Length: 415
Image (cartoon, rainbow, N blue to C red; front, side, top):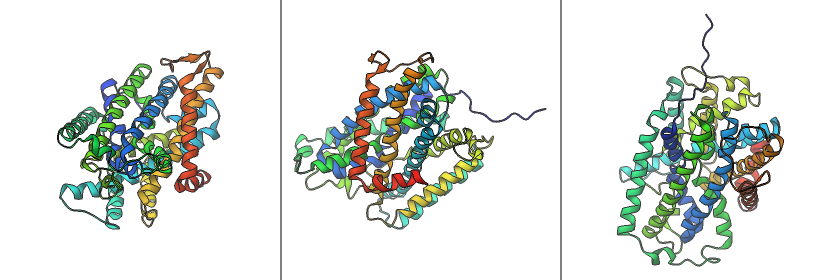
C-alpha cells in the first residue's frame, strides 16, 4: 500500500483566518511603535494612519491575486505566474529575508518584555544571547512537534484585542492631552522632513502580516470569499488600534525633544506578549513554495508529517535569524538597521505584487477571479496602479535614506 504523503489541507474557516490575520498584523505594534516614534515624534499617529491606508490599498491586490491563484507562496507565487521564475524568486528571496528579520526582532524584544514584567531591565549583550536562545528553543519545538496554532488563533486575537482596547480606553481616560501630542512638535523642524521621510519606510514594519496571510491561501476554505473579508476586516481594525495606541503612547511620553517611546522604551513600547514569533510557520510555507518550484533546494519543498513544513526550512530560518541577530548586535542601532532592511524587501514585494495583478488582467483575462480589485478602468485596476506607484516611491525613499536598505538589501539578493 502506497504511503500517504503529507500535504497542505484546506482547514481554515473565516473566523480562524480573521484571528490569524489580526494576530499577525496587530502583533507588530509590540516592536514597531518605538522605532517609528523615535523619528516621527508627534506625527507618529499620522504616519501610521497614512501607511495603514496604503497597506489597505495594497491588500486589494493581494486579495485578488491570492483568491485567483489559491496556492501557497504569497507574492512570490503570484509574481512567478505573472512574469517568470527569476522575478518570482527575487520577490520570494527578498520576502524570506523579511521573515528572518521579523523573527530576529521579535526574539530580541522578548527578553525586554519579560524583564519589564518583573520590573527590571536587560542590557546588551544578554538580550541578544536570550534572543538567540528564544529562536533556537522555538526551532527545537517546531522540529519535535507539529504546532496547531490555528486552533487558538481566534482566542489569542481576542485576548490581544481586549488588551489593546483596554490600553487605549485607560490611556484616553487618564493620559490623553491634545497639548501633549503637539508639545515641542514643528513639522519641518521637529521632526524634520528628513525624519518624516525616514519614518515612512520604517512604518511598513508595523504592518507585517499581509504576506503571511497570503501564504495561507492553499489552506483556506473558500479562499475567494474568506481571504478578502478576513484581510479587510483585520486591517481596518488594526489601523484604528494603531492610531489609538500611538495617541496614548505620545500622551504618556510627550514628544518634546524626542519621546521616551523611541529611547527608554524602544525595545518594549508595550508590555505584553509578542506573538510575532509565529513567523516560524509562514517562512516555512514560503520556503516550501520556492523549493517546490526549484527556486530553493528540493528538500525545502518537502512536507513533513511531524512538522508539516520542511525541517530543513525550520533549521535554516532559525540559523540565519540567529546569525542576523548576533551579527547586527555590534551596531550602534541594530533595531533601526533591521527595520530599514525590512522595508527594502516588503516594499519591493508590494510593488511587484500589484504590477503582477495588473499584468495578469491582460495576459490571463479568462482566469476566474472570485474577488476583483474595485474601481477598474477597462482592464486596469486603478488602486493597484496608485498603490504600486506609492510603494515604489517609498522604496526609493528607503534606498536614499536608509543604509540597511541601500546596501544590505541588494547584497542579500546577490547571495
